Length: 493
Picture (spheres, rainbow, N blue to C red):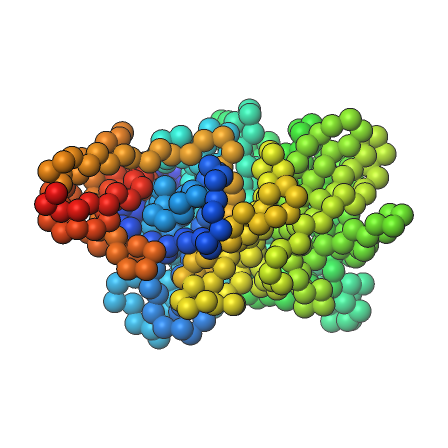
């Protein structure tokens, strides 16, 4: 695994764009994000990755492009910015499933990063022959500037990717490893089991690997929760899923936090990888006085603050078959003693049993979101809820929904910056003029309930409107398009 300077493993940016075709499909193929009727005065924006799973669930052909969207809390549709993967053309339903996905989109520091997979599924789901399997790094103009890609020995995991102030890049990866699971499973036949083991790797700003931590070697094979391990691994159907990493990030002191779905949470030394504190799935619930701390299928692990004697963290407990129901968990760790204690729990308004993924994202002012992950239930018409946005007291600002069979992997609030929207100047002669730093303008007429039907009606910097209606313009911005707010035109005025 390496970065772009080592051409044996990483694609050039040119070849990335040639396989991406990022600009070939527009707003008409983007799954609309809508909110309920509650008024939202908040100016926040959010980023999500959306995947159309109609074919995966036997519900017919794919209807929407797999998409990254940035949307505004107050006016989620049309999105502030988007990029799409083209819909498959002429792929028969009985052929191999084409996996063309984007996951884990986030804005961090001065970068926009996301995971990209382009591959046919094979019998082992290992994607060893993938056209692309890695992370894309973009600048503030949403222009791709670097990549980090899997190789034959380490397969990158799409769950997390971080860049620190030194320009170091940290990623999760998996390694094929033979493990003796007899003490975990109680089965004599499990003396040598092929498993996928999570590895945390760090590269410096010159692309040199400077840190590697093997979770099974450091934590011990017996630390995994067996009912979770006894499943096929993510990206390796023939392997046992020993760890299933879902998070790797820097703590405020420069050491490293990990989140392993089948093992637990913890902190290790950035210097030598020794364990500073850990909270294993096998050791929960953790009872501390009158408080009970527990999590199941943890996801979206984050450090919240570092004040006084404590560092405070959040994690999404997605739930499992024995512990259904998701919630956001906040806990703190004493910096001197490493004692772990419960802080609070944030329950969703809806009773949600997710099939995986999701996020618990807390803003600096204490507002927070809960996104449901692989939750495709409670459809209202052709849509299903995927996210709740709460104020710090728990009151709901709004719920947001996407079309049925559209899976939203994670949602993150954008705290520092977001791409600009173009502005439409509405002239008195029903001429619309696009304004902004974008290019390659495309005009759309919006119609139907909630204006979700987008029809291309023109290209270029101006549009002469001949039909009354609602219009917006999209302009190329980096690897995607920025979109204006709608304007209403009464033609012939």
